[in-house]
Amino acid sequence: MLTSLSQVPLSDDCALVFDLDDTLYLERDFLESGFREVARNIDPVRSVEISRRLEHLYDDGDHDPIGALLAEIGRVAEKSALLRIYREHLPSLQLTRSIARLLQRQMGGQRPIGLLSDGRSVTQRNKICALGLDQLVSEIVISEEFGSAKPNEKNFLHFQSVFPHRRYAYVGDNLAKDFVAPNRLGWTTIGLLDQGENIHPQRFESVPRSYHPQYWIEKIA
Image (cartoon, rainbow, N blue to C red; front, side):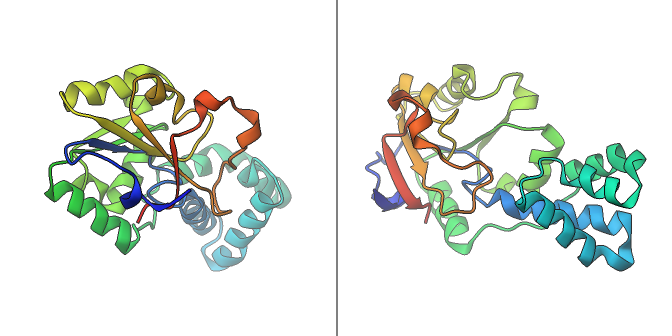
């Protein structure tokens, strides 16, 4: 176990590709931002109360907190519109100062920086814009736009094409899909350890060793 990314042995010209959700920022922050936006559209006067209720439903294990809340208040017909608001809103997000500084340093050096994320185009692009990552990374691949999702090797091979004749490293958090393909391709794989706040918990015992990263770190920076 290493403390941070700086302790992982990487060559100076290594192309460094990051996952987005629960790697460069906490996906929980997007969830709460979306709940606040949904709550304002349900009732702007009671928005704080409603957003807290949505969080409680989610924390209690409800996989459809918006649907559950609308069932409680008798407004189920609004679910489709509110889900669209949740998915397409411009979220209130920001990188930590240390991660922003790290990315700025990497961009100023020899290492090209990429971003590889699964998800809907509009949702992920809004997150990237809110975080300012469009100014901090050289190449962005989003599964809906690219036509395939992790762990498809095509998504990783794209970065080898864009950044040729280099070594490559991928930083992610999801044992189910983040590391198996880059492991096969000979990349350096780096897992960010869940500190108890990830949307998808890391179940080490449920995946074979080939799905594990070569290094675990406690934080990006």
